[in-house]
Image 1 (cartoon, rainbow, N blue to C red):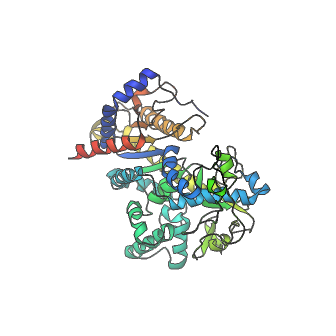
Image 2 (cartoon, rainbow, N blue to C red):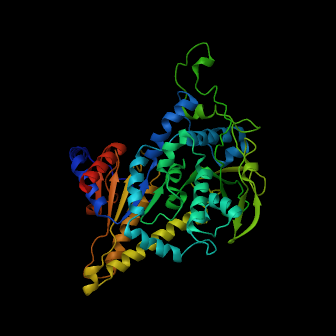
Length: 462
């Protein structure tokens, strides 16, 4: 589990609150000087972005997925799909957290930086599938296009294909989607930025594309076989899909002559969610999705068919399917797709290789070359006791790995290459009581702190 999150003392908290402006300025300076950006996004962003949608969809009480495990699917499918269908609908109908507008601007800057070209070059050499010209084309949505129009052709044709992929993944360009699509990145290799997140609502991938996002606990908009019958087989729910979830008795006092004396608990509210058999609320026709196994296409099945029922089926064996996310700690049935894991691991290898090369230069060459500078921005990881610490562990592990790689070269011009910016309303300190100089602790509301850092960045650029 790693080190427990460090809780500030009252004196430390008071000092960090009073020094918030200075901390944001130092964070902005670190951002401005960095060549590479790593965003580590915690659960606070997901909670804030779905609260309003959940209230509108399900009344006054919140739902809990804590007991919606794989065993519940066997004992009570209607309840299992009611809870997860409700979460799926919330994810699909709620917009990304406002912080993504700021983060999107930052990432676009790093995507076009000189360091991005170096990292893309390293990644191209280690592409997961040599048959595909770009790692981005390993995504399910890309395969829909590649199967029909081919992956070769002119740059202009490829641009048109990528536009079609975006439409397949995010829907058509009607007015209600325009604001969101402005934030959406294309499907090319991200270059000098990457996102690591424990959020399961899929919003980070919706904004940045899944090639730039490591969803360490999976995502509710991706599905898998419950068995699973085929290793690594994961598919994305079609655009426009919404589950038919019965929420009419979900904490609604109007169903009774007398008002409720006490509001229902999260578990009581969740148990009122039911997904009846039959058709889902909305499921548009989608194209056939080819399945890729061992680097080649062995057969093609329709994702649409697997979602024709309100209790989705596996697209391969026809058995029950489930969201491709960790339903519980130690969920042995969860399929962490190899390409999703390897994309992030490959990007980190390329980054470490470039850091090592820069730190190992000597003499005159050292005057012309320098190691990449990396800033790790962690936002809202571990908001309360009981939350998972995966994101905090990853940000600190990457910090140690990057600085340790540079130091291990033994070069005379060695210097610290990575800086952690930890933005957290309650736990902004570095864990383990070491490496304090490597961490800028920003204690405050996550969105307000991001806006302040962004404003300071803009002022520095003028």
